[in-house]
Image (cartoon, rainbow, N blue to C red; front, side):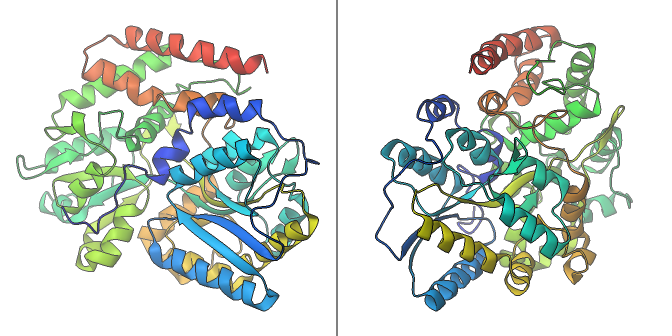
Length: 447
């Protein structure tokens, strides 16, 4: 296995789908009022900026260069750290406890949901309106994620999703020329086109370490009309006939024999490498395999198809989540906060934002970049469509700290594993999840 491939033991998507459980309660316990005077990290005219290491290093390098360029014009010394999202999550928790916050921190859906109740983020509603006017608005999922009580507490920069990535060369060998629009079509074509033991049909993990599959089965669950919570985002909705129908369907897909041997031990790197190495036809994933192929095996790119998440009998759903966002931290120093605001104006400027999104693979959070040539490439265009129409974690409600804590249990994948691997009945798997979820939601109802 090449060292150049994405190492996903700390993947951004795994972490933003399951923010730290134990940390969630402790963050709320050390809530910091907005007027708090918190010691600055570093001295005056020195800024500390915590950013994410993503699966598109050229975009990371370009962003770092632009931050440094801005700092040079302002006579400011910047200390930029770029770490995996999970590391930044732990650093923010430690910074809250020590009351030593950075000036700017990158946040995804999970980190924003977890830390916003601690009042460490500055209200940036005015900047949100300014950038919205500048770019012809933000996409709805981006606005929904960062809006709490009618105010914006972070600035969305990109929207990511998981789509079906396909090996077009294997489908062509089976004379299959259209990508699947429904789950039935996906599993039927997977069964028809696979050639075991050389390659199998579906690379969806059946292991809790493979959290990519939590999103896969969650979208399938929605397609059967089942949800974890109701629209109020507070009431659990797990024990329903729709949930039983979804789990029965998941079991039927396993019985088709399209999953490769060993999939019950896969982590989040396994599905990527299985697609890249030609061991499976379909995976459900963000753009990381495409980014990897662009850098390491560009000849593979024409054989990689991208299509929307398939539909179930009750509808079709694509996830949408904040991959990159920026929060200004409540350090208590107005001068530093104003510098942070000025930096974000630079990062949202036309030339900088346009160049960055061309190098990155997700969709922008703003609407004003839809005419770029990159969206004519179907491998990029699918991500833009998800930004326009995608749904948030918590559907039909919104992300909440309770859901973030429950998400750490990979609840939907956990039920599927119980039914497929452990041979439980759907009702048994549902009952177990209810027992896990009820105390979590009861705890947050008391706050």
